[in-house]
Amino acid sequence: MARIGLLTGGGDCPGLNAVIRAVVRKGINAYDHEFLGFRHGWAGVMDGKVDELTLQTTRGIIHRGGTILGTSRTNPYKVDGGAERARATLAQHRIDALIPIGGEDTLGVAGRLSEEGVKVVGVPKTIDNDLASTDYTFGFQTAVQIATDAIDRLHSTAESHNRVIVCEVMGRHAGWIAVHSGLAGGADAILVPERPFDIDEVCEHLRHRQSTGHPFSIVVVAEGATPKDGDVLSEYQTTDAFGHVRLGGIAVTLEREIEKRTGCEARMTLLGHIQRGGTPTAYDRVLGTRFGVEAIDAVTEGDFGKMVALRGTDIVRVPLEEALAEPKLIDPKLYETAEVFFG
Ligand code: F6P
Image (cartoon, rainbow, N blue to C red; front, side, top):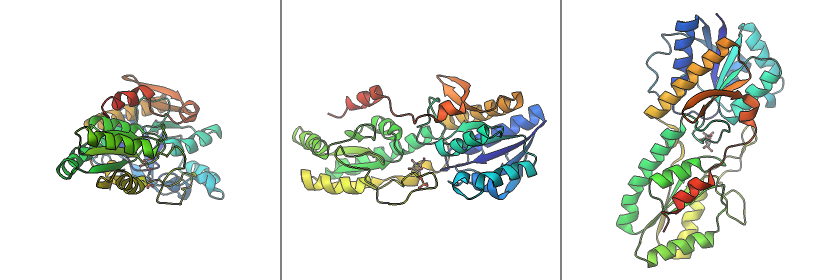
């Protein structure tokens, strides 16, 4: 029997509650562990804001979006004495092991604490699907489905008005959401960070479509896509505690440029946080549950410094540092498949 801390950090993500429920359910029923949930990610660990997690408090949450623990983008290593405060809280609450559920940033903090002797097993979370060492993260499939539904709806206006519709999706510096939703939604162009675009070529392609009997087009653009001769086009100047620039708004520029250069009416839609909200798909509930069960098994076996991961159809454990080494970018072959349908 052990006292185990749980936290969710970074952007909220569909499937987080499925992980919490799975960890606690198996941890109590199979191993008799006790659980404390830290509120709002690493902020709760630094400030000692904690709730007991029981079978009762984690019941009936598998279908709920967001996270019952709350989340934040707090980085204890960017706060004076933050890491010391975090370790002091863990000692005060007699935490034997920690299960942080998060993306690159949250797990990056976990990796540093692990090097300093804290026992951790990480669970990979992000709608962006950009974490190395796991084929998929939970939340990604839900985001792709939401974006695909939106593209389907945007087709109505594109087709009725003969317009170019630019749909901006999230994904940070990886084009996973863009390429999957664009492929599923039959996009006529997909702009991703992995392939800097030339606006003249994009407009030429749209004009060519027009002149060959396709009077409307759908362009899916990832928020982190960049022009060949420029930088990220964001509406914001701010960075978060992990040094990431806030993205969003490239579609505003694209709408204007496409209309100006092609003479075709253009409209943009920015999906934003709609992609992260609401109920997780069945796939993400199942993946989150499988990750949660594996994480509590790893903790119970004392297999620390690991992250649970999906490889093919298997759930495995990988060293945390391996998972954090590089972001996982889109497979060029996947993009080439989507490209077949741009014509
Ligand atoms: O990492 C998930 C994500 O939704 C990114 O796709 C996006 O760039 C970012 O988080 C937005 O963060 P916030 O909710 O802090 O604006």
